[in-house]
Image 1: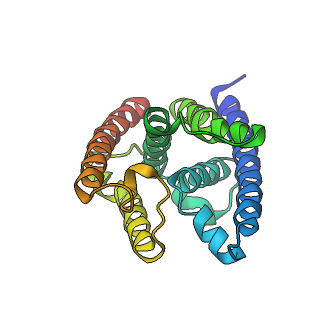
Image 2: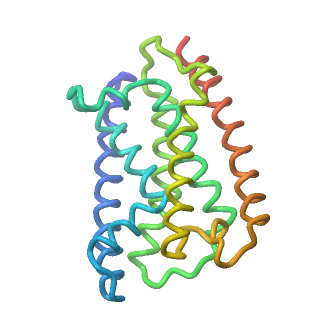
Length: 210
């Protein structure tokens, strides 16, 4: 099997696995939230407040850009975009493993979805990102500030929403339970680590493009 063909096969696996998992997680979350008195719109907003969901959705769209020719997915074909999602999905996995993996999950379906979104999907994407054929357009260090824009927008959204509804997607960002200093410290560590990962991702992408 050629490298191109294997990469395309992996992209299809990632697209189908990720798309199905997100769809099932969406239905499970919406049903659970509406059963607790939330409106459909409120449940959807809650669902998309998680970086795990947004990043996995971006990864699925990146896979889609590798198997479909539509120009609407051109942004996801850029080396910088693919490197950015490699870093973000790695951060999702590492943060989950270090800070969230010991939380109680109520049922088997939720456990399976949780492990796919936080372990299986990230590992699959990182492998695909390394092996997929480059076309000579490597990411550059100058693009790192642009790569930081999506996560920065996400954090602004999280804190604006939290200020309105007093609800945060992750306990280490929860200003209703932790002091501002603690949250800032948590964010500083995550951001510093992410910047190092971004630099490493660019370095790897440059090497693989050669």
